Image (cartoon, rainbow, N blue to C red; front, side, top):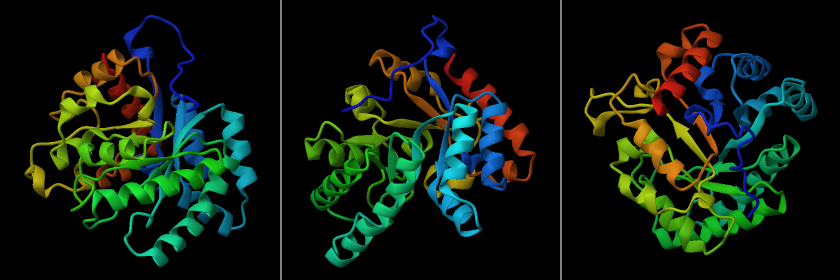
Length: 283
């Protein structure tokens, strides 16, 4: 597969061995164009856009070309994009409809020169063998657009909620282009086996969602709103970063937060603080 993990800065500083990326959910209230500008001006290397933001922008009279130009003007890398939905189903008709929707979103991702697109899991339980078959087909379709789909797990859903589940689906395809998108908070929330991360080859990891977890409410009761800035919680993020270093992975750490308290603040301040704390978390 074509690797997106090569780092452009070959310096020796430990804080410079990853690509710093902002997932724009972190500053959700900002407009799409402001999200792009803020990400660049606060010092990030890369941006992880949500495709629905682009769809809304186009529906309001803009164009995908406008977005592509804005991204090109900033020089921001685009290691990942959120997301493809409804593909992980046992219903053949629903799956066919999901592939049609995926093609439309993949067209956008391709136009924006995105490297991967996240494939989100369902809320319910689905046999892993079926999920693997669906992902393999979705991946084949995504490769037609040059934007491979990457399996995501969500710690609070009933089905694909751990690193183990995502890796079983990814590895089960036997395809070199298959990848997963780990998420530090989802690993905590779903009770993932953290040691498994050491065994997963780096070229099967597309992007790493970076965030921290709190102690209250109890882990099993937490939702997306409980995510906090790196270093503001209880997770040993440096240990996770060191695992990635040992496998010679130098891809994007993408700050993904859905904290409503952050959404009340100036998005530029939130982005700036997030980057500072990302760097502190892995030093």
